[in-house]
Length: 351
Image (cartoon, rainbow, N blue to C red; front, top):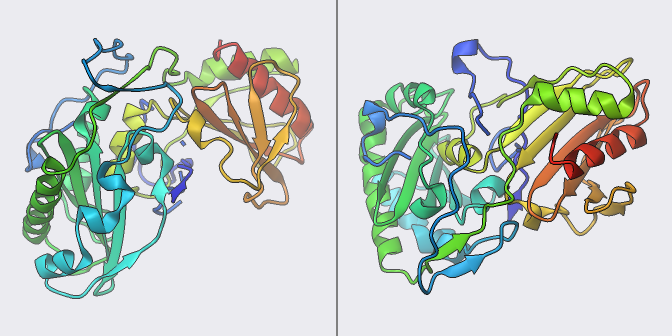
C-alpha cells in the first residue's frame, strides 16, 4: 500500500527545516546518496539540476517516465527482513505495522517497512542506487538524522552497497543512543543488502526527459496570478514533522516541491505538492472522481479521502508527473476557477 506524500509548512526552528530541492506528505509517517554505512562524515548535496538521460543499458527493462518501476523485494517486508530477525537484532519483540508507504519512495522502486516494540518505532527502507542516481542525502540534515540522537526526532543509520541504498531509523525510544542505533542499523542493513544481492531484481531504466524540475514557487505564483487576474504570491514549504530518511532522499530524487499561495478571504492557502514521474499514482484511489477542467492534456480528480470543510483536494497529472492541490473553498476566488488555473499552468509546463 502506498500513500501520497504530503508536505506542510514547518513550524520548527529554521535550523531544522528540511530544505527541498524537491510531495508531496503523509507518507507512512507523521503528517506535512550517501555511500558509507557510517554517515556521520556527511557528504556533499547533489546539484539541483536535472540529470541527463542515461545511456541505455543492454537488456535493461524500460520504464516509461510516468510508470511505476519494479519494487525491491517484490514489495514484501518479510522478504526484506523478517520481524524475528529485527527482534533478534534490537533485543526485544517487535510487531509489523501496516502504516503504508510513501508514494515518493515507491516511485523509485523502493520499499519501506515499519515495526513497533518497547514503546518505539523502527523503520527500514531500501531504494535501488540506480534510481537515486547522483542524489545524496541533504548535508544540512545529516546531523539531525545520523549524528545526533534525539528520541523526539529520528535517530537513523544509512549505508549503500550491492546496488542498494538502505536506511534504518528509530523514534520515540527514550533510551536509544547513537552507538546502539549505529550497531542495529549496520546489522539490519547487512541483512537487507545480502538479501537484495541474492534476489532477481531487474535492471531498469526510466525515461526522465519529461520529468518536472523543482518548482520556483514565486514564478508559479506569477503564472497563477496571470490566469486569475490577481496578485498571487508563492512561497516554498517543507516538512512539518520529521519524515523517515528514505522520504527525505526520495523527495529530493523525485524533485518534489511544495508551494503555497495565500488566497484572499480564505482561511487556508492554496497548496501544491508535485513529484516527477508519479503519474502512475493518479488518481490516488478508486473512489476519486474525475473532474473536467477543460484543459487539454491534463487529467484531474477530486480526492475523496480528503476531509475539510473549507478546502478540497485534487490530484492532476500530465501523464508523466503529478500534482496534488489543496484548494480553499471559502475564498474570494472559487475552487473551480483556481483548479482550472492550476491545470492551465501545469499544461504550460509551469511557465
